[in-house]
Image (cartoon, rainbow, N blue to C red; front, side, top):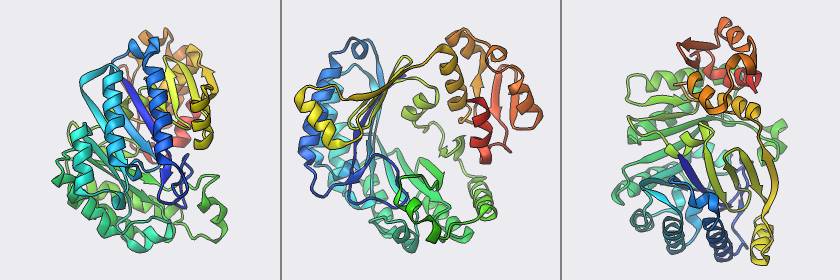
Length: 375
């Protein structure tokens, strides 16, 4: 699989918890940014690497892509599908905030080829939404979901966050239950991480966050509520109904190749990783001046790529296939890790079934702590 990612970095406002490469749209020239993005697309479409691929997914993320003029988004999608070699039925996703879409805009996107919608709900509690700086209400989230159904979307993801400031177990159970009641095809369920650079991080001393016991309880409630449904826990933070895994993200977790366009976007060309300049204005200036946009690069060795593929692959509940890894990198687990995998298995954090290795159920809630031993 090869994926195409387009970064649209502008939002209605900056949420308190957000540390992504995004900024408020006020005062920004959205059309000029799209012009630059289309220029980069045209340039990369002529690259021999791009012409040698078959792209299986296209993902518009941000930021909030749906604050851009929908006609320009539709034209951008058309240009991507026209200029790059895509498979006949690619997965085409777009992220949206509930208060930035309508039936008409969603129908236009659907007609342009978008077949997967990811709605940033985060919570179905108005006080909690206000506490983290979201610009929509719980009711708006429900309206957006139903508008997407009316526009013809049959593959919808809802993003939810637990561990929010002041959130209780009952709050979390109510939000997750509201999401499940809508019956989306996919759920992304994240624990709040207070990242450096976010507004919330600057206010951490005055922000009451759930303690570790409360987070464990929220995690328990997640498993309890989703047990008996047809949602499959296929990645640490992701659940889907049968056959509805996010194909674009699967490529990331399998450490595949992808092309990223836009400010701050990352590309991985068969192990060569390049990152564009973060600042949107600087990105536009460089594109308009014919200046390279990449500011960081890394060529991974086979050993580094093996370790990265293991760490990413163990995020998936199916785990990793050691035989496939050996064929891909010409390395064995013993050469890379020595007895580390055996020790983690002995401690109950890994399970091995033939040539398949996966995180144990006990390891999933503390996955980062386990995976850091394999980096």
